[in-house]
Image (cartoon, rainbow, N blue to C red; front, side, top):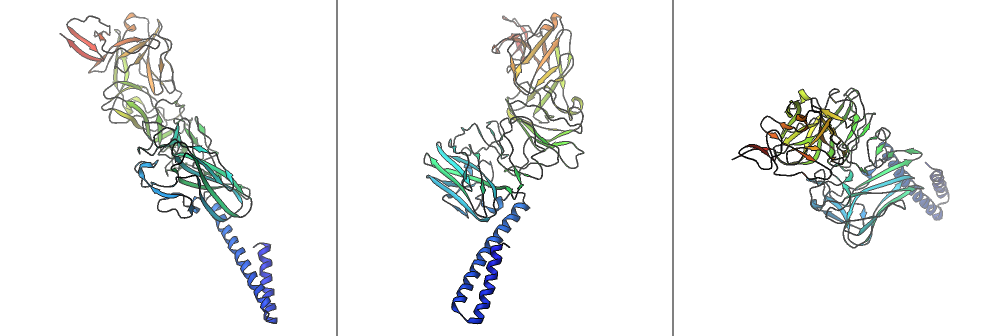
Length: 522
């Protein structure tokens, strides 16, 4: 109890005693006024005490004090309208499809009374009509003003279904709702200097039209000298989050610029996102796993560098892994991923033997015979797909340690996998390098600027014999041909080769290779 409240109670007791002696109406009115003041002071004190307890009990996450999901109503909010429209949600196939919206310039506000002095942060998912602007604010301090891009996907990054803002990919991981794109995290942080009302506002301006907020989260970042929450930096590469994942709450405004970055923590704490799921690509020492790093979900994207995993001799596990990449049906292509691609639609092969006449034989790769992870291979999918799934497990055969990108497999003519874009070495007299083209053919690299993308591989062949300067690939039921590829040269289609892999301009009657398939020409 504060000194002011104690003095007021003393005054009430004195006034009541005076009234009972004098029976004075003036003394009675004074006593009533003092009782009213005591009640008001007590109400503020109780409210501040209750909210302080909520802050300390929840490590600063006080989202429960506000209605920030708009699932059923907008109690406490002013200045906007409740909207239910699944087609505009960043969550695909979810019943969480309501948000708060304003269509004219002005503010949408929420006021919390009797809040203790401290520093607060508000985070919200936001999107608007193209040209519409939004300025978040809390405790009188504004955050960054943002400008909307409308319904059609146009933002360089947006909130994905993991609740993380990252570069958009049409391959997957983002909402399938046609008008559900372009949600972004917006934030504001402000300090309440004394106990009282905490006002949250979202002010719209710019082009007239809809301006929506959803998933509003409220945090007390500092109270009475104690820091409760932490905000992750923008993740651009592999990042140690041990100092973030722990007793402190990680605020939900997670932004990642490289979607293939791996995050990790050695303290046993997982990070859960605004979507209510584990943060993708986050490795932590899960209890009961003997010190191994475990990622609940690993989601990688074609076209972005993958740096590998942190070193951990106890093992690295991916409970569920996925690479988003366009793979055509029934076409051989190279693949290297940091997990075992167990997808049942795949045929997996690795180079097992190189004959003296230049035929490279491939054998079936299995989990038990070919190791676990980070192994380059040739794959063919029975149907066109935009992703490959798998798991990573074990402390051996690639389960432990760091994936370096210099990943090899096979004998005689090894495949070399890469996790970052770069040039394939130029063929020399002693060493020939080959890539697999989209035409199912093998192409010898003779130029110095032939590039290869992440999660792919090339073949290295060492030897000076002329027979090995031109090779073909044998998969048992089909054989591919070979062709040279130079700087910027396009792969040629419908070229004809004999069974030795030699190009034939005017084929006569016999068996030839056309686009990687055996063809009999009469």
